[in-house]
Each structure stands twice: as C-alpha cells, then as structure tokens.
Image (cartoon, rainbow, N blue to C red; front, side, top):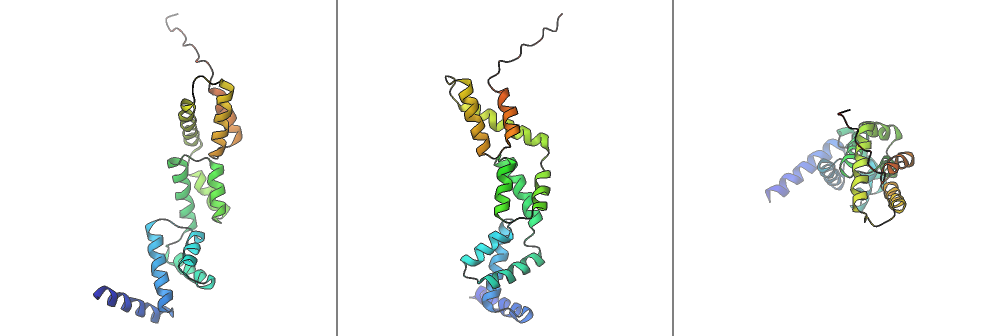
Length: 183
C-alpha cells in the first residue's frame, strides 16, 4: 500500500512539475528502467514505447526526455554494441554495421564504435573463429571444399571478402618445415 501511495505521489509531483499526465509519467519511468537495465538506442526505445501503448507523438516526447537525462546516448550505445558483437559474439564488421544501420544509428557513431577494436585484435578474432570452424569439418573432405565452406561461414558472420580470402588460403596448407638451427 505504501509503495503505491509513494508511487502515486511521485507521479503526481512529477506531473505538476513537468506538465505531464500520470500515464506519460508512468511511461517515462518505465522507459527509464528499461534504459537503466541495458544500453538502448532510440529505435529500440521507440518500439518498446509503442508496444506499451504510447502514441508516436508521446514516444518522441519521452525519448527526448530520456536523451536529455542521459538515459539514451547513441554514441555510447554504438561503442558498446560494437565491442560486444565483435569481441563476445565474434561477428564481423559488416554484420555489425548492418545491424546498427537497421537501428538507425548515425554513421559517425558506427565508425567510432568500430574503431575501438584495433585491426590486429579483429584479425585475431576472425582467425580464432575460422580455426574453430576449420577443425569442426571432417578430415575426409577435400581441402578445396572445406575452404569453400569456411569462406561461406565467415561471410555469413559478416567478415569482409578480401580478409576472408587471405585467411582461407592459409588453411589446408602443409606446415612449413622448421629450419634446423644446428647448421
């Protein structure tokens, strides 16, 4: 009972200060909790607000407030998204860019997010994904068929074609003999 009374007072007080209705304040508070749990972008918050029954106009108003309060920062979102998808999910840059574009993230934020993962680290991630997949293929298959499958797999993960081709050439090559150091 006390929680409901406190909540009602909070919503009433906030509505008096900001000229928002109880419904608007309730949606704003819900959206703040949603954004506090995990980094969000405007597109995902807008979709969630519409799922909760907010009008397009009200969604825009709430999103503006969330941006002003720092709950939504698309630069921060892009950096976190890139780091997570590249390092944890081991996606390629193309897939990350495609997903961020679908979320309507500005290109400059996408570029900044991708720049946070150095090229050498990116190649190491790609190499580890390729190595694990290569080892999962049966040894009885033709090397060229395994390379083709590996190329297709890496492309589906969003890696760039020139880097795929360079990496795939390394697989299936006989190991270089070690030079005898006693000569």
